[in-house]
Length: 251
Image (cartoon, rainbow, N blue to C red; front, side, top):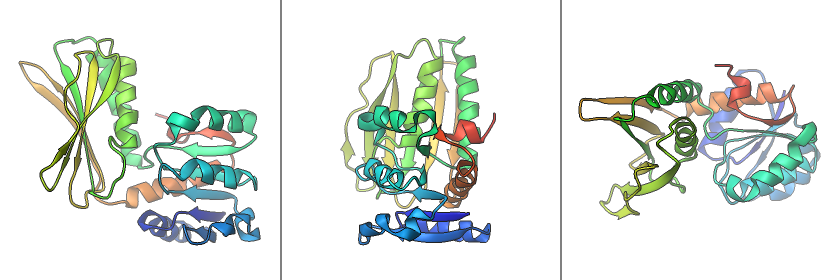
């Protein structure tokens, strides 16, 4: 398979290594300094482009890829608030193809399935209050993480006592705290920690007077995310429309 990379930072380099090891060809690498290559024959020859950039650039990158009918796999977060309807229209009936996920880790896909099942069970036990905490490296721009938002939405959809989620405080290594943990009883609090070079930790706790039940996913490195992105590209090559991990992983 021919793959183009959009974004050539740490994730882009790791994706390149894994893709080549799995027998794929990297035909084009686009970063901030060679945006004109979106219009190159090399980019247009790609079966799939894998995009890991930032929330402000992602949607524009999709449009540039779609202009050449190149399918996109993307792990960029933060664009859905303003452009979700636009992307749904562009991918309707398979006109263009986007595989989007807030997290491509196979472990996180399993963790998400456990989260959904646990929330369904906990809907029967209102004595347990739920809270979500995510921890990432100090360079991460968005808070809460896209993965935390996805997990929170899965919980809210299954717990009658929670009507929405609310972004709580962000705690930094230097001791300062942004935001507040104030929230209503019917809001799921999602707190953030920015620490060192942590790839990603997500913890969900159900606490009661009697006991506490906690599930955690702790990423050891970015390798799991990169492998998942390549697996998603392999899947996307033969599928169309708006795709996500529930299409790739059937559990």
